[in-house]
Amino acid sequence: MNFVEELRWRGILHDIMPGTEDLLNKGMVSGYIGFDPTADSLHVGSLAQIMTMIHFQRAGHKPFALVGGATGMVGDPSGKSAERNLLSEDVLQHNLQGIKGQLEKFLEFDCGANSARMVNNYDWFKDFTFLNFIRDVGKHITVNYMMAKDSVKNRIGGDTGMSFTEFTYQLVQGYDFYYLWKNHNCALQMGGSDQWGNIVTGTELIRRKDAGEAYALTTQLIKKADGTKFGKTEGGNIWLDAEKTSPYKFYQFWLNTSDEDAKTYIRIFTLFEREIIEALEAEQDAAPHTRVLQKALAKDITIRVHGEAEYEKAIKSSEFLFGNTGIEFLSELNDAEVVGLFEGVPNFTVKLDDLQAGLNVVDLLAAHTAVFPSKGEAKKMIQGGGTAINKVKIASADDVYGADALINGKYLVAQKGKKNYFLIVAE
Figure (cartoon, rainbow, N blue to C red):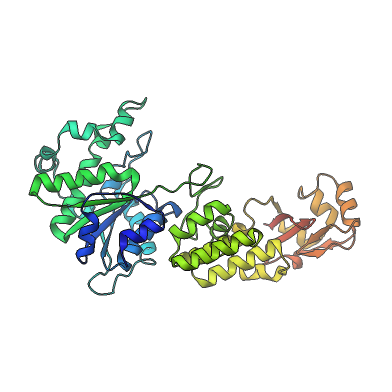
């Protein structure tokens, strides 16, 4: 497998330094990608870089995942309009552990010569004094060179300016590359296209400091076909951590991808061979309503991130909301999963004591909650047969519901019509 060609046909390659491809074709190369530890989980925006490392390793090369315990204390100004809050060492260490566990799901860390390695730049920066840094690193890169970088020019020309802390970021990242080149024979740094300036600062430092050779490769920044940012929803980031983004919501994110985006994403975010992808595309073009691309994409990524069992649960969740799966399915879910399933659905609370005493269904839906705006409307719809609790049609406006109707001892699921859900929580 040719690593660069693999990235090319998948449409993810952006830029590559001359000589990089020749180096990669000669034998095993050690290369690295940095990951930002500003949270204790990566999000789907990080998946493009994770996939790059997977392809790199599958091509026989040795990937290094650098988690920025030191650079996380500074904050990368690339693509940022304002300086970020600096993180404490305790928070960073917590975040690093979370990221490490996630990367271990994707990369092989025990497969012989090209086993992946995880490194933390805090290990080599923690005892590096300021005076030693400006003497041993700063003197090799001119201010003119640093000022020419877009990440610096854009900020200095803007309203917020740039602090000295952020200005030095490219030197810090450049030294990462130098350190890994010097101590681990890392000849290649990879990253998103917004990292090109920081990466070539590293190659320049290696050349000027030790007359060495190092190389750079960047990948496309992923955007939706409509130009909006990939990986963002109205609710925020789509995280790889199931506690932050439920597997059901994660699955739905990919399933709801547009046809045009699905053709791009299935190349970037899956390991499907070209022939399989082209066959899926042909099938989708012949019958777009089947959404075979979205289903294949969502299944593959959900299983790799969360496992087969969580994928199956996500499918059942979809069928529960949009199909004929019975209410008993909710008993398989914990509280967080129930709440996640009904995220975006109107939620109401009722007193558990009231339910234990028994509540008339009209009072329950129009007085104790606001499923209906009035008792009259509730009665009318119940009489018309269009209302259900726990997926069972309400037979009469005189029906009484007690605590024995609660799912998991806590929930009632009300429906107006087939698709209008309401979650009632007894507390």
